Length: 63
Length: 169
Image (cartoon, rainbow over all chains, first blue to last red; front, side, top):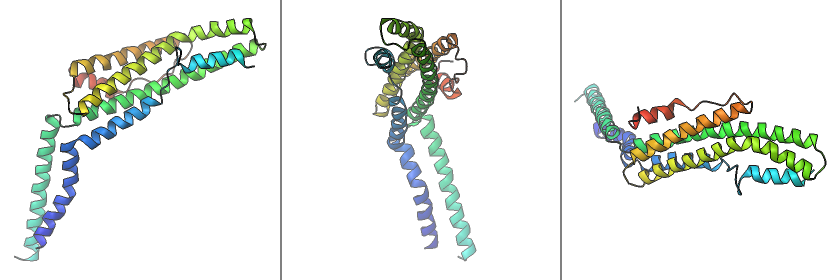
């Protein structure tokens, strides 16, 4: 009985790792979400929608 | 069976389980089970952080330059607008390089996202994009140096390692 419990304990410990490793989806999704979060913070600077363009126009209008 | 024997048996089972875990983990890694997507996403994050940091430094320097123009031309009017336009024009090349790098990073992330959704990782395309990011970042550094900014961070080794891992030497 003790051995069975020990085996179950080991299985419980390694099972989440196996699932994460073989499904890959959750960890992949997290890595991609993190990259997207960082990239969304990088602004467009030049062109009609650029933050530099808006900043330049504001400087021309405001003292 | 004594308690000691039972404990030894349990330890033996645990070791065998761990050995199997290591073997299966190696197979998963070698067959690219999720690892290529994660490596790509993480390298993309690292590259984005560097571009973001460099962009922040460039923004700060441009702000200071345009502030100086405003101080030199306190009156709103054509003269001040022309002076601001002239100063802004100096910063456009680095701004365009930052925007192009941003677009390349977006392409990188899209290619990674498509692979994560189940498609094969398009290695030649990804390699081309990552090389583009490296080349564009060089142009950011060069353009920034011409404006007196010479302390931009380098691209992390992780990005260069990915190029090697993708077969790009």
